Length: 136
Image (cartoon, rainbow, N blue to C red; front, top):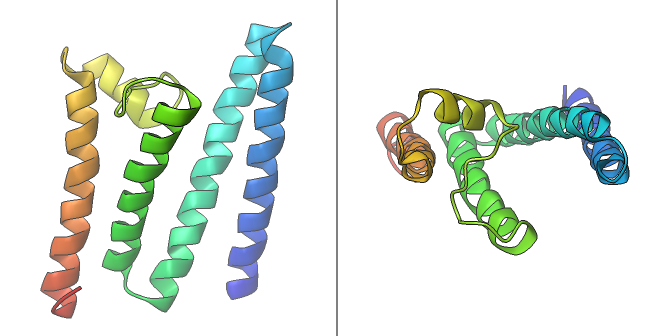
């Protein structure tokens, strides 16, 4: 089982990086190809993250995996948005599934909704860990 998880992680990481390069290369000449590459690397990044936290869950508890995934989601996006994209902290993008849902069904407070969703997942993980396992 562990070898399968490692293999999926390595392949997903390679695909994520490859599609990021394709997006950057094509952004100057063909926005359609760049947009497709953007969607693909986001997909593989999601696979990579799920795989990593599945590994955490196997060797810890599933609520700890949820806590880790929530912390990753909050702080990874925070760093990418502030340092990489130079946009607001809880910016709602256009590619990720949740971003598209918030843009479609959300209110004018999209960034606040995104922050609330991320913090609620963290609180859910902490609550489940305490409830099922007696503490953090």
